[in-house]
Amino acid sequence: MSKHETSLDVVAGNGLLHRRWFLTQGAALVGAGGLGLMSARPVGAEPLDVPAWMKAPGVPMSAYGQPAKYEKDVQRVVGGTPNVVGNGVSFTPHHRLHGTITPNSLHFERHHSGVPDIDPERHRLLIHGAVRRPLAFKVDALLRYPTVTRIQFLECAGNSGSNLAPQPPQAPCGVLHGLMSCSEWTGVPLSILMNEAGADRSAGWVLAEGGDAAAMSRSVPRAKIMDDAIVALYQNGERLRPENGYPMRLFLPGYEGNMSVKWLRRLKVVNAATMTRDETSHYTDVLLNGKALMFTYPMEVKSIITSPSTGLALHGPGLYEVTGLAWSGLGKIRRVEVSADGGSSWAEAALSEPVLLKAFTRFRMAWRWNGSPAVLKSRAVDETGAVQPTREAFVRERGERMNYHNNAIQSWSIAASGEVSNVYA
Amino acid sequence: MSTRENVGRLLVAGAGALWLSTASAQQGPNLGVEVSAADAAAWDISIQPDGAGLPPGKGKAADGEKIYAAKCIACHGANGAGQPNDRLVGGQGTITQLAQVRTIGSYWPYATTAFDYIRRAMPFQAPESLTNDEVYALTAYLLAKNGIIRERDEMNARTLPKVRMPNRDGFILAYPQRTDRSP
Image 1 (tube, rainbow over the protein chains, first blue to last red):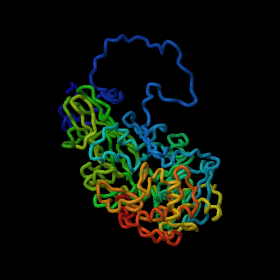
Image 2 (image 1 turned 60 degrees about the horizontal axis):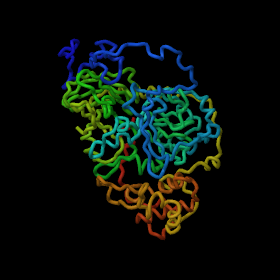
Image 3 (image 1 turned 90 degrees about the vertical axis):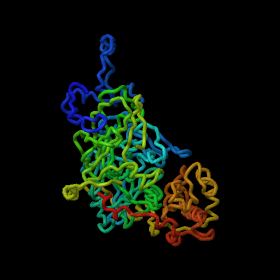
Image 4 (image 1 turned 45 degrees about the horizontal axis):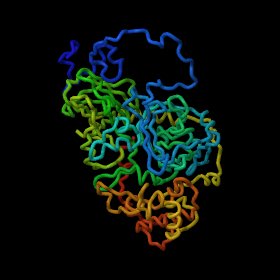
């Protein structure tokens, strides 16, 4: 124990410390960020000379900023499908990021037939079907509409699917769980456009279709469209990136990512779900008995420790910040608990404010690692009372095969060497 | 999935209703351009499971086989056996197994979905390039290869919605029945 620590600070097994330890034991510790920040390291013997970059002016201003050249490895990990360039995914590298907002250049991707090069002057959003008057909206027209701005996550239903394989895959956190991102989305509430078109209140569904080569399409309950759905135009303050739907996308807070149709070009008000390929042959969740759940829309309560995680080794015993992300498609995060002894005991983590609806919430936990093997886990609870399930419970219902909506608890094993690996514990 | 702990559900529901009432009161500047039904139809390529939206035209498996050999076989393999991309034929009875084979025949609940998807997205390099007759013929070929219709059966706007898929009853609707999963 350090000289600041008392026995009262230990709140769970294997060295987890009360969250007040971060909040009261000096802001410098929290502000430093990153792994291993509090292991007491003696200052090296190198002289503190004046560096070259202080002895001459730096480069001038730039029109569009870029990350530091030393951060060039912070990139999406791109995965494809054989024979069909443009059909695949890229993963947000959560193991190299912090905070809750995903930079636009690192937002995850899932394309079914590549990224279309859409001329915004020629793009139209058509609203038709069971409406009083079919309407077509130009991009410029929508930019004049009242907007809402909200910070919300987007998670692919297939995120974390590889963790259902019989053996735990050894890959960075951002590959295992990189089909999720969180942004500040700005757009036009769809309820306004639906009311202008005079959508039939008795028609329960809206078919949403993208303007890509796959014309990717999904049926959305009209209730969701009229509740909090938007036509998103801006992401983190700038117009959408092409790979995230430029010039406009549907955004359905909390729902599986596939439904937030990118490059949105058509909304058809219909009486029944269209039963598109992506809501029947895909994005249905097969149970062990062979039946499959269909229309499992909300991404349920979940959390992931992003550090430490695979590839982020610990460097000797001492004090560490265990940190990660928690979110729920059904509301706000109420609580996140962390275990350092494989789930035998749990302690409540500190949540970074603000805790927002259907958004990433960053959690932090102080941990004094004693240098022995340990298993770290996090478990989230949302405001509806839903508790993140264990992998064992999830597999009991779905089996060990690729499946959607895997929100099971992630376990990271810490070896005595400090190396971290993915385990089913 | 999740388990549940005791909650103040009423509080949550109340907050949601308040937000809804303010949102639906919002007015827009009415900048949409009215479109004729005929113009909207040019973009309307979606097919409902009851057949609504199916265009005129027809096709049989024999014609579909020729188109498949020319435009589909490179990605989906001979007889729809798959490789390098999705398998389209077979796998019936495997869905309960861990090593399940999901194809049109073993998994898809509606035949109309095949027409809708082939027309909008296939062939991968040239979507929306097939005629309606070609899409009917390809749909007939894949349904026949899966043993769901006979080789001689003609697929058209009347017959296709009547095709009963083997896994039609294999799904449990999570919305709106399982209301604990909806917001």
